[in-house]
Image 1 (tube, rainbow, N blue to C red):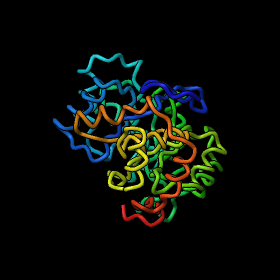
Image 2 (image 1 turned 120 degrees about the horizontal axis):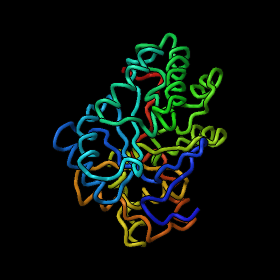
Image 3 (image 1 turned 90 degrees about the horizontal axis):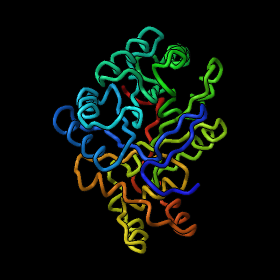
Image 4 (image 1 turned 180 degrees about the vertical axis):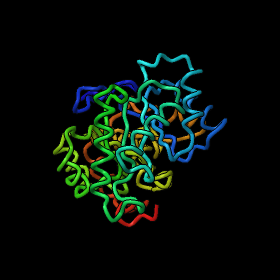
Amino acid sequence: MAITSLTDTYELNNGVKIPIIGFGTWQTPEGDVAYQSTLDALEAGYRHIDTAAIYGNEVSIGKAIKDSGVPRETLFVTSKLWNDKHSYEEAKGALAKSLEKLQLDYLDLYLIHWPNPVKTRKDWETANAESWRAMEESYAEGKVRAIGISNFQPHHYEALLKTAKVIPAVNQLFANPSDLETEAVAFNDQQNTLTEAYSPLATSRLLAVPELREIGAKYGKSSAQTALRWSLQHGFLPLPKSTHKERIIHNAQLFDFELSDEDMTKIDKLQGVAGNHTNPDETDF
């Protein structure tokens, strides 16, 4: 597929179109910072905003969306179910709360944030199944246009498929040149589930990697732009995060170059240079 602009789309497995780059808001504080950075992203041309209940910034993001004047139907907004709400009733209530905070009538995508939180560790499979059932109902009711998962490794995904009526449209992973999440991505591909990359720059740790700087220099691009272009050429959907207007714009300037096959292979070999994904079965949250 040709990649030409920020508003190009992938097609999810239910036919919904999703812009190929999203604006990430993890670790963006509620208040002026979240509000202004979201406005800056929308002004820069982003039409895909990714947030979550646990980020604590849905109110500011919702206000920015409303104040931006960008038509709702041109936007793609994602939020996520946090770990303390993994039951049928709690998942229903959590979605309603996110919609209220965001001042939206519907979400474009709603995800189970983590598959095996501490609260439901003894019975995570049932807890996910019940949460998913609530999300399937919300999807059928039009409160969300697509539903998906995040941080699910293949065994978590397989367990969900035992009862799921709707196949997850997205699995959001810590996918970047330092951790290709090979097994999880392969399983996603088998299910026609899009891989979103929520830390495409490994929370900025990739920016100092010499190999990325050297490869980027050949194209007149930064290590950040090189890593994000790599993500797109792998068919991932990166969610770069910044609170600085110039970097928000910079992270979207990915469409005037293409990494060679040789450079893609070199970047693939950077496994581990900036850390790996968190094991969802060993988290303490």
